[in-house]
Length: 115
Image 1: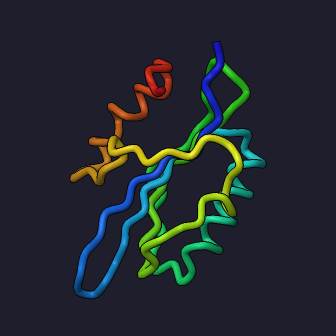
Image 2: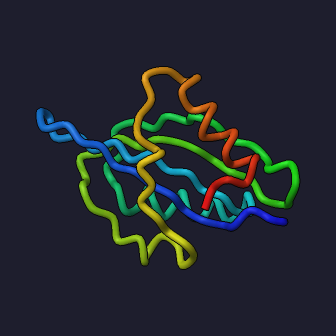
Image 3: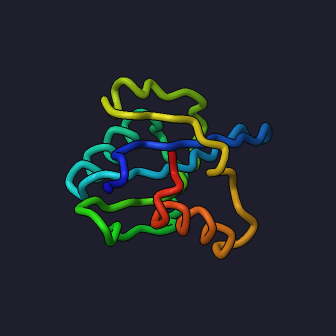
């Protein structure tokens, strides 16, 4: 049983200065992940900061994943210009206080509990 290719996202915001923190989880082939990330950067220019949270290969399939955060003053994305597959706002991608807080989410990916 394979994990589904998808782009999951969650946005949190702060008012002063206006900043939006976009957390993304991309599950796909590595080549596709690179292209999707490029289109995300294009949609969110100017990107103020990028934080890589985790990445790796899904051990029971041919897919990889990347989990990262982009900080930007841009509040909207036209996802139809980013990815043609499954795109979903997923509140499980809410910011964590520590990097270890992401472990539960990553475990769910490998356990195929992600729907």
